[in-house]
Length: 364
Ligand code: SF4
Image 1 (tube, rainbow, N blue to C red):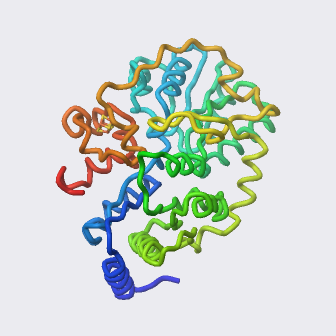
Image 2 (cartoon, rainbow, N blue to C red):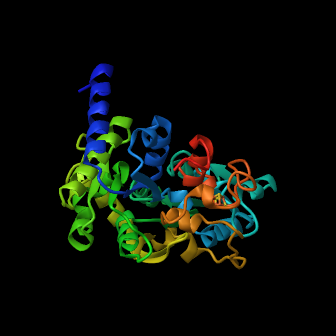
Image 3 (cartoon, rainbow, N blue to C red):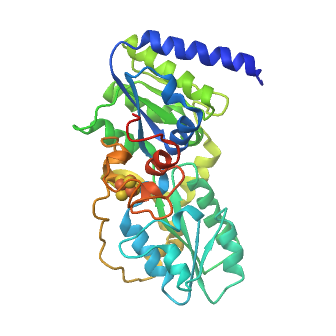
């Protein structure tokens, strides 16, 4: 049901008033998702909150958490003459150890931007003498589409299509953050899109194991304000539950059909997250039945040694222990048009969001 602008204004005023009334100590609330980070900046929510409420960006930008060695492998594949790389556009500018896919494309490698992994199948069908490798990057939201693409490639008997999987699962990363000694979190704003697939129940461990209040939130300004209100209310009342502010999209059980497609093709695997390191069962790799579609398993490639960008603090930014402007490269050496680290590349990256929408280093 659509509500009028006047009703929205009244609701926003109520949430802000209540957040201010209920806040009686400094609170560190992490918005896990990069889409939330951008929405918070665009709507000016930070300025409406009491100064005790600190919003911290988390590891919810898939491009940002993809480690350098994955980029290096994708670049190495792109240099093979019989290979076409297909990828979402925001992977192009992410710096690898010594190059980027954009730089390789400029050198003439066949790297094509797609808007859906399914487009890769048309490219594979039209280039049977080439190997077509889709860079499968993203969380539980995008992984089912990649899985459906593998099933469709099988149905079409395409022998030259592969995925290079860097898919990640959000709950194990949250588990790692909550278990870390150097990270203090009073509450979590959980990602609406991912939650639409995995459902509310996937987060039960947050309250059971860590007693951290958590709210699944939508992406409108009013959604986020209401979710912050729910968090602050829980904290004030000494509760730690998983609440669902985004009920119009997120069902308790999630999207069972999408998860079924996912589980036909992928299995859980340990995965490395940029800045966080190896997290058990936090990745998705192609299972044994469909292993021939797994580029890493099927196509040998020599990858250069991985080098991390000097001075980049993406790891700390992704763990919420440093703000982007605390990186000495922010804004001067590292900018969206000339990124040093992955957090400055994607529009959902915390560094890019602070660069585009933050009003200065003094604004916290
Ligand atoms: S400002 Fe650039 S170099 Fe610094 S942490 Fe962010 S992405 Fe890395």
